[in-house]
Length: 80
Image (tube, rainbow, N blue to C red; front, side, top):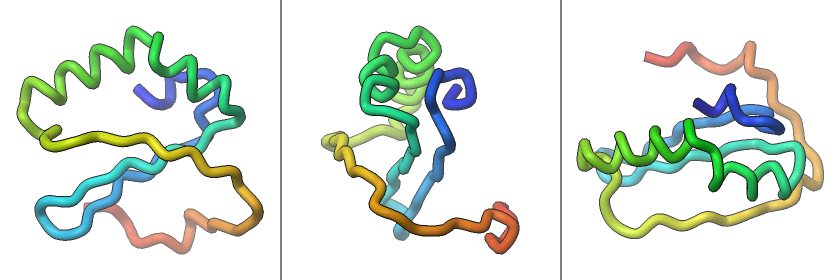
């Protein structure tokens, strides 16, 4: 679903233990993030996840501006 969104540069699915899960997505601009709310594929994915019960508790969105950094995906361990 994220690959279908204009301006989405990547996404990471994060977990701390069994209860804490987060999604960190990287976007070209804040207007691309704003457009996500109107995306039919995003709405369908969120609804499907909500029906499974995997989304529980409060949700929040925090926007950060990139000030620098480096990420080499080739050095990350395989998922799974």
